[in-house]
Length: 302
Image 1 (cartoon, helix red, strand yellow):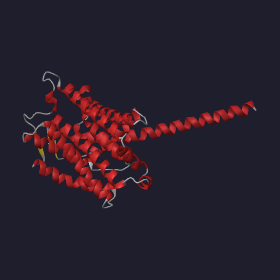
Image 2 (cartoon, one colour):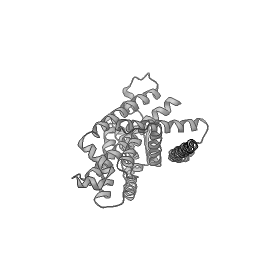
Image 3 (tube, one colour):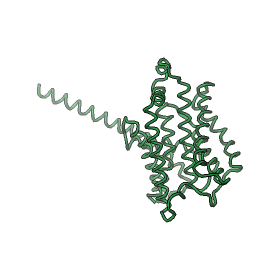
Image 4 (tube, one colour):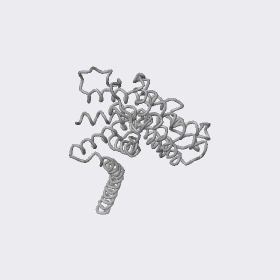
């Protein structure tokens, strides 16, 4: 059970990293995730059922997610539609796109080869999922870590921190924002592709609540692994996704109805939002108590 939860968490890590890029790096609340996640799943599963290679199908899902992000980015930057509304518009449009891609509300795999089939057949399926998840997440973290050390990556970070100062220094804020949207939703769609391969099907409703899952994973990762170093921040997103899926796995083992998982997701998000606030308030109170105690000691010595 624990291994299965870890494996699923590793597959969902792309979603967490994608949400991290828009939510933390660009400081943008992007809801495109709820459309790009099933988009990656729909394209990958559809291509597999048509006889395409699994690697090509997975990459196609990633690129489709990038394109979805570009659409949201253009609505946000060129047409000046508020980012929240731009994401909702793209997400809504992708619902119909996904239906057309699959031809129906859901589509299942039968004997098609998925990524885990490249591993020895005698290995346990849960361990196969873990290995594939680790390999892909290591590649994602490594590539993004390298990217954020390049001029383009540094420009993206600068735009998120201070778009006005970035524009004053000759950085194209619109272009960098669109790139950020594209990378983010590409990774989210990649996660959808991997989850669909693991589940053996793609469904039109599998994107519902993904933004909550992504935010919960981001905040959980930041609780367990805090750092200013980019590679550690990215790794924290993987940790957060694994922790989140483990919590859901444990909840299901206690007999919680699978239909209540969305409520559990919302509850976990509330906890990971409130917990750091309580920690900060407690730390502030301790500092005040220490300060007043030092003042009392000083007055006593006088």
